[in-house]
Amino acid sequence: SQELEQSPQSLIVQEGKNLTINCTSSKTLYGLYWYKQKYGEGLIFLMMLQKGGEEKSHEKITAKLDEKKQQSSLHITASQPSHAGIYLCGADRGTGNQFYFGTGTSLTVIP
Amino acid sequence: ETGVTQTPRHLVMGMTNKKSLKCEQHLGHNAMYWYKQSAKKPLELMFVYSLEERVENNSVPSRFSPECPNSSHLFLHLHTLQPEDSALYLCASSLIRGAGGANVLTFGAGSRLTVL
Image (cartoon, rainbow over all chains, first blue to last red; front, side):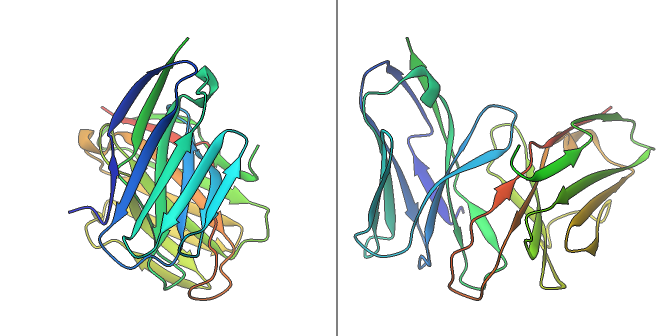
């Protein structure tokens, strides 16, 4: 089974709508990272959360970390077509050399 | 440009061919990674070279062979591949400061491999 489960697997929203993507870990988190991938391309780093309760924002994207629940959420406000892509959460195993990713959430924003 | 360069971007090969994927980074990072991304499957960590140590996913077939001659270059040697090996192969690098520290990976654009 996957150590990082994301939900939903895919999301189709109308432009301007808000949306939330969740990432749940089955193991202790030493930091949670969010990436975005355009189809067929490499991953782009969005933000990193290291402490329970931490919340970070970049433009219209906000991520939060609930350390007790071993969960993180990514919230996009007033979505735009430029937000479309695959969002992946990632974490390392605390050893510093093994970094693994969640199952991914595919986001489509309809103009 | 992310600072991690992968070549070639696209590769088509037969099952009996031998080819290599190349990755180069000039970010001063001390760890490099190979990931495999297949359609509708999660990203799979294949190999990590970190501080001169190699970590590998035991489920990766021996027809994939990594090489890391120095901290800036990483290769993935391919031989006698199968059609199910067709995928996007992603290289990444990071600066590891110690266990528990931040570990932000920077990715290349990927090499799209098709095995006929």
